[in-house]
Length: 412
View (tube, helix red, strand yellow):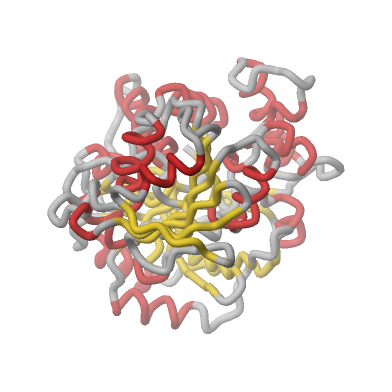
């Protein structure tokens, strides 16, 4: 079984693509999705978050929600909005946000290689979120949300990509958020074989985003294998929908923290405690870290530049040396008594796409006591953690731009 292979993608007809594609299911809550899909009957949100078509307050994990998703997908199929590409092919998926462009390969990736860690992970998953994706995939008999993978860039793949994108894309649209989404089909036999062969000779792929989707795909495959006496290993359920980007094109933004209180400390005593492990300087302007070891602190309408003492940075541990770990180990835990970032309700997280003004807003409103701006985790750090078989702290990476749901799906 190859690491990746082409697939017969299900996608909207060109004239409906703009109406269909939607943000990933997990970046909007139910109410945000309901508003986003208002007066848009063909939005993919009706499939990825079908609770929006049921009464407000409906449990998004109820049987009725998954059944509604199936009904909505069937409605799209019956209306002829979606078609399946035959024969199987690869796709190139281009994302452009401002001056940043990245072009990935849409393919299906091997569940076996996920299970044996050739497709490497760096996050823990939550059972409830896994269960939700398992039920969604089983109900739809399709994978509709791609897993965001990355690989160490390869010059032959780069050259092949440049050849394909010299032709006009079959999809070229700008989403509501200004991100440009483009799609090219790679149907040439030789090009497809070249891609399959090169990837099959790679040591590994890395999950950037989509740990719950890939874990759910693995569980679905395991269940179906157990119940399929004719199982051969070639069935679609043995692979999961992915878009795979070269590591040198990936863009990770900062993932910042806000805290509700100072653990009973006054601001001045808090700063004194911080100064034990960090150099603390007042900043006239909002401070955005420019290098590792730097942090911005917003407290009582003032910004500070924090710089951790160099002797505090481990050199051999890929997890402990992350900025997110340094902040926890030398400030959040010892000073604020925030040790469990998954469960502690005194801390919240703000994606860097929202800017430093969102940190100021959360503190100035009185909702939060302080905010911390972090330097983004690098791709090299992410791969080092995954290669070591370790796990990153929660909310370590925020990837932009995001893949759209509905542009291409994988039928099982």
